[in-house]
Amino acid sequence: MVESIIELDKRLFEKLNQHYYLEALDPITVFLTAISEVGLFWWVVVGLLFLCHKRVGGFAAGRTLALSVGIVFILQAVINQFVPRPRPPLSEEGVRLLVDPPLSSSFPSAHAATSFAAMTTLVYFFQAPSTGLFR
Image (cartoon, rainbow, N blue to C red; front, top):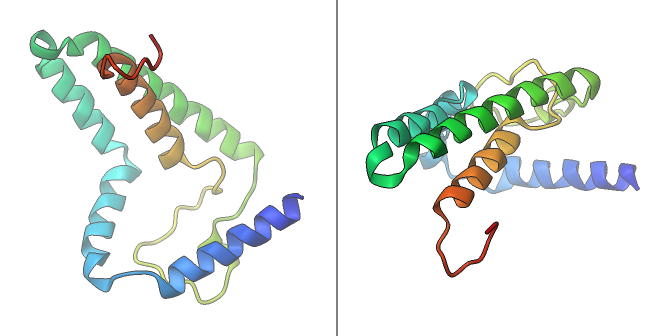
């Protein structure tokens, strides 16, 4: 079962990397990668929530967002030490790279984990009343 998931993951990665990309978006991708590697995007959102705290109730949301992203980032780094899944560019031949790959293993994904934690926090604080999510 796990082998079939890994094989599917490899085939999807290869197809996306080699066949489905737009060179015009490469500079944007490099920029977004640079700001996401240091978590800058979510820290800017936290800062904006603190600045607008009276208008949107952002102090509690900003504090919770900072805490959730920080905790997830630390947990991801710890789990990463115990799950040595190599990054596809380091284990596959002929991979098209725009930036140097990180040296850490690829599971769990810091980007996916922090994004999920951040969006869950933001939905909790700023949900539309009609959705009924969380409350």
